[in-house]
Image (cartoon, rainbow, N blue to C red; front, side):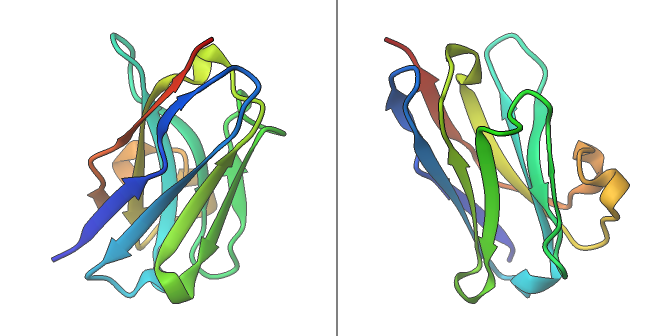
Length: 126
């Protein structure tokens, strides 16, 4: 059974940092590309960042470029999202997702992913 578990969310002040983690089980993790998506109340879920399986190339939404960094540690079946200089508009539930047959152009597409976690809340407020 495939399971993705997110952690690391919480309250933070504007300008602060958080590091989210997504731990996978039940899959050969190195074969999977992983994406982070977020959804705030009343809004559609949106793409944040993704990292490919082999090679580890990355893609970011324009809204987070230069502030967020996605990385992976295959030995721990974990993908991280380092979030710096957080803004109130970054407030959302953050979800990780994994897919095994993604090409670079599909990394930002929710429908391309096979498995999803339950999400972790990030609240940026003073």
